[in-house]
Amino acid sequence: MRGFRTLATPAKYVALVAYLVFLAFPLLWLISTAFKPPQEMALIDPTIIPAEPTLDNFRLAFEQQPLARALLNTLIIAGTSALVTVLLSIPAAYVMARYRSALSRMTMLWVLLSQMFPFILVIIPLFLLLRDAGLYDTQLGLIIVYVVWSMPFALWMLRSYVVGIPVELEEAAAMDGAGKLRTLKDIVAPLLVPGVVAAALFAFVSAWNEFLFALVLLRTPELQTISLTLVKFIGAEGVARLGPLAAAALVATIPSLVFFAIIQRRLVGGMLGGAVKS
Image (cartoon, one colour):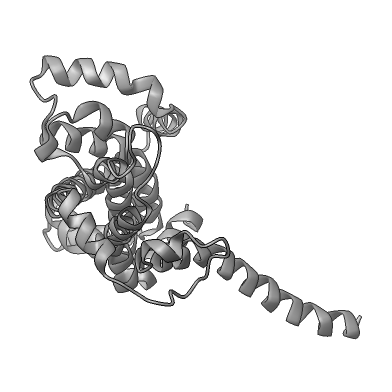
């Protein structure tokens, strides 16, 4: 048994390293391709490290497509969607956690069921609703769609956090004369920070990477997001301009990586905590 344990520990580390390599390889290949000149990408035996690194792919990417404008559009849409999702989810999650009733249970059931709907099932009704409301082909319309689509996950996570907060803290605040809004702002909200960070990042990354809704609901080129702009590097015949596409995709990946690098500890703690509290 001791010999088996001795062998099991190195095997765990080997499996962990293999898994990390598996996860990191697409990003490494993307970085490698972004800095390769065309002649290196045409080699029969490709290499990970470019022999003659170049920045021409980045120059061509920004010259061929309006990447800067697409990044700004996506940042506005994703950032606003994440902010609104969190602001609406905090009070709603509080009410669902503290005022338990048949309506609250039905609401949570509907929240879970809504996550089972595929995008393609709701895209036509959304298109018709936004068109009739005058919000088709607008950033506001797309933001509303992203908020509605992200809120069920945010509600579920934040509700678990609210349930985990002792009611005695709120009772003490009420004895001191604090109202419900002040209690929510000064007592509950600070304790929800890990969950709020996780929910906000989920909403931001989902909106940043989303493609189908943006494809159907945005028509004006000046309003299009980065995911729609990346597709334009692929020609009508299906042939991709691989170098500029890799460079543009790397630029589009940087904001998400920066967010994860800055608050990764809060993100992991928030997601695990929200998952186990009840």
